Each structure stands twice: as structure tokens, then as C-alpha cells.
Image (spheres, rainbow, N blue to C red):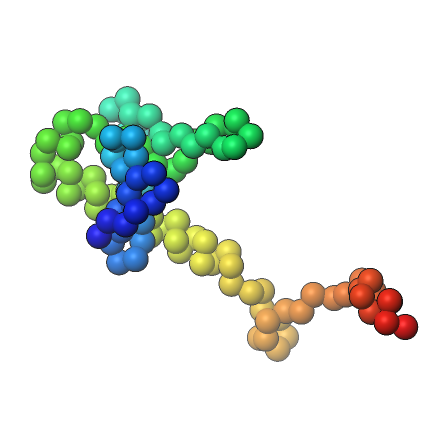
Length: 123
């Protein structure tokens, strides 16, 4: 499935974005599992210029032209990009889980260093 994304399109499978189309170029999600394939082919990462002028390399790389011309090869590279996107989603999910107390198994509570400024004003 493709959905509008800023000035281009995002490619999704199972609700996970694994590719994007921007500036007449197709990019696939990359990580340690498939980045070498793109780098070996001499493909550049997707670069995003922030409003402050700083440029950031994203975890997507340009798909080689010869891959785009071979349907079976394109499907293989897209599958690896989806695998990469799934690993990233699982990693984000694991990081966002609340810490559990080793004693009660309940979500850990942060201790408060003292009364909040709002509480102090009420007194």
C-alpha cells in the first residue's frame, strides 16, 4: 500500500513503512541486515534537510536501477527492506515498554524529588 508522505509517498506492508518515493527516486529501509547490499551497489542514503539547514541521513537507501528493472529481484530487496522495518519497529516497541518493578511486577514509578512548583503555589 502507498500513502502520501510529505512531498512523496510511503510504501507500507502490514502497517509498517519499508520504503519511500521522493524526488523521482525509490528508497528502501536499511539496517545491518541489508545496508551492505545498497552500499556495495553505490547507492546513497535518503537525506533530509532540516529547517535549520542541518542534513540528516535517514535509514533508507536508494534502490539500484538494475533492481528496479527486475521484478523478482525488486521483490527480494523489498522483502529485506520490510524485514529491516520490522526490526526497527520491534526495537522501538521494546524501548517504549515501561520498566517493571522486580518486586511487584508492576510498572515502576518515578520518585518525585519534591513538590512541584504548582503544588508550592497552592500553599
